[in-house]
Image (cartoon, rainbow, N blue to C red):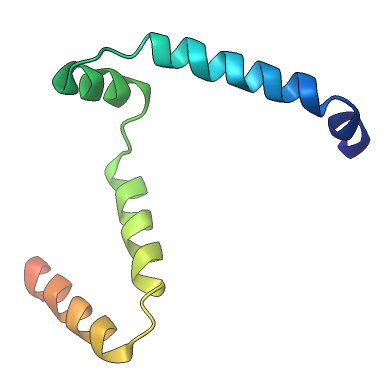
Length: 79
């Protein structure tokens, strides 16, 4: 697969550019319409949002900040 990609990288890049151009030409110009269209393409569910939030939480390096954020979340959920 890697050899094929290296051999055909120009064609792959061209196709990706064509797909992106075609996609962007179909996005409405207005903010509200654009958001509605993009939500229709992918609207993450609560499990996805929760997994993302947890992933971001694990990236906090400072223990004091991590504890402060955990306390805020605990307060939100009534713990």
